[in-house]
Image (cartoon, rainbow, N blue to C red; front, side, top):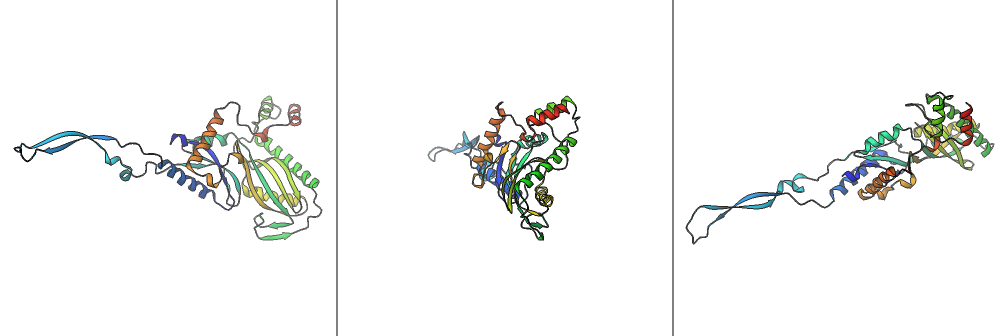
Length: 311
């Protein structure tokens, strides 16, 4: 069981609740752990009685010591060795979102709490569609408004994203609770440690349009303290900024701290052996000093470093 304690991540498909994912993995882990070869039953000393032969005169019973298995320890008596296993869930994904979902087994739950105390960022891919506004900001919601979008260009979209990113960067500095004119702030910015002190409102630290073919567009977002509902609302607000409307067609998490899509186990890999192997890979990376966990969203560019120095 010790080899199955740690962190790993899976790919949660859209339309599936995260509790169902967790419960499925718990069941598979219990099945795998209980399917391991059984240890030999412990032996106990027992005194067996022997009668003399019929031709001999009766002289009572003869006792002899014998080693026999202790049947009270047999799995058919005690039940499965592992009957409960604790699987913790990291930053949740709602039922309509997909992507990287970090899970923890056993003592890994403490490591999971420590991981999120380091202010790790997450990355998402957002798919949007111009021309429609809905009551829940998704393309499956009830349509409440339709509008034109022929005037929207990628250059206009990029300008809006740059403006919104600047607003969020100011919010990041405000919630950092660090004097921006101090050497401490500069050192934290250089090492990617600048972030909100405690809980804050959602902050988008990076915004980029990777696909633009009206009415459809795709954004890459790096963020902190977000929810998937907030990200859908953000797509809606982009439409308003561009004098139009927009609805979110999909939310997919591509990175959660050090865990990426390349590390995620897909559905047919939610077995005990694959989970143990994924946990082992996490432990090996953690021990390697050349694979330190960093927050790329907090790494300043050359220009931002210069600005911090001047401030």
